[in-house]
Length: 384
Ligand SMILES: Cc1cc2nc3c(=O)[nH]c(=O)nc-3n(C[C@H](O)[C@H](O)[C@H](O)COP(=O)(O)OP(=O)(O)OC[C@H]3O[C@@H](n4cnc5c(N)ncnc54)[C@H](O)[C@@H]3O)c2cc1C
Image (cartoon, rainbow, N blue to C red):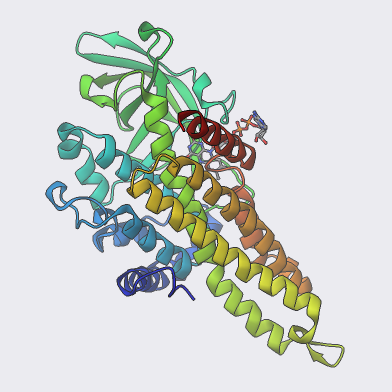
């Protein structure tokens, strides 16, 4: 199905990680969902098999390649794992790994990147109790210490927060004046960091989310990622990768579900014929395939634009997120409808719908993607 868009070595990488996930994530996924925990054993296994070294330059301890390779491996895990939540936890971590490589200093590469490649867990903390869409209104504040910073604030609904080792935290340095938004790398085992309880969610229960309370957390000078005051521009690059990943993962996650519903539609009969013979059923099935094709194509275009440092990369990644998450929800609903009452019963199909709904909000809502698309269009038109 993916042949035209992906060269053979990419298909092989996707298959390799799909197979790994089928053996090490899928078998425990239902149990992890029940317990509402991240499968740490599976996480460690993915790290041991080199997931977090993909895309990282060889001189930094990685295996080289591009971020498209890492995205491909994560798409493989989405396809093989039967676990959207686990995959979203991977996306949160992937954003941090790429951020460190792209925007980090030699100090970050030496001290922070290696554990994250070996199996430590990362998070990106933007949202606060008063809101997540308008990230520039962050109330998390850093004040000067002799040899660093003291960071204070509360972050909410953060993927991996209950279990993460390291977080990228958005805050401000009021002493800088108007342009004060800054990104900080916080060791979550530091004094002054307190984690909220894992949140109870409608779905995505294998991807724990929660609050992070930061109370005068001391950070060394080197904890700033990118330039102080330039955090928003850096952040937009970082979250663009996450957004494109949402689209690619949506396509990959739907592939085995499409195969399964095709089998079901051939076997299930109504009005003396397999339901697949009925045109309205065919329409729902083709819609799922169209979502897979579209989400994959726009996501790969977004990732390629990021890799090429194309000025429209952020716009394209927002398109990928929007098409991917809206399409995933529509497809999950179609999968449920096609399987009638069985689809509505508590089980894999209804779990897919519950999980899919979370992607409308995580990674920024569809309204925020539209807003970014327009802002980027206007910005590039102004430059033209
Ligand atoms: C499963 C999951 C995982 C998450 N993981 C993380 C994470 O790892 N890190 C993190 O920082 N956050 C995370 N979040 C939080 C998420 O990013 C925010 O919930 C999201 O950005 C929306 O913020 P909010 O909930 O505060 O809604 P609000 O910002 O309060 O918005 C409420 C509604 O108003 C709409 N709205 C707001 N402003 C406008 C506007 N200008 N025009 C039109 N509509 C508007 C929004 O689209 C939304 O529908 C996660 C959320 C979920 C569900």
